[in-house]
Image (cartoon, rainbow, N blue to C red; front, side, top):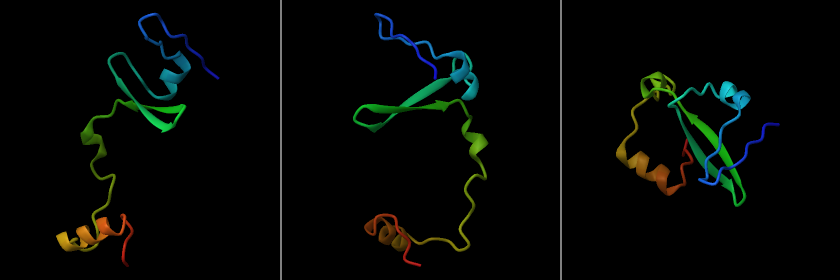
Length: 80
């Protein structure tokens, strides 16, 4: 387990093994996501948006606005 100390200015140095595991380099950004009242997740924001191309496949058929609105009303669940 890696630990760090908070400075008087509220700064923390991310331990090297964590930086290596997240492939973080100087100038990269991280996001803190609250997952519980006393827990946060650190997510590396070090990928260029163009790297995400092709990550999500196109649907077999186009989705209409009406179908999108229906999915929103159903809380994101598909009607198929």
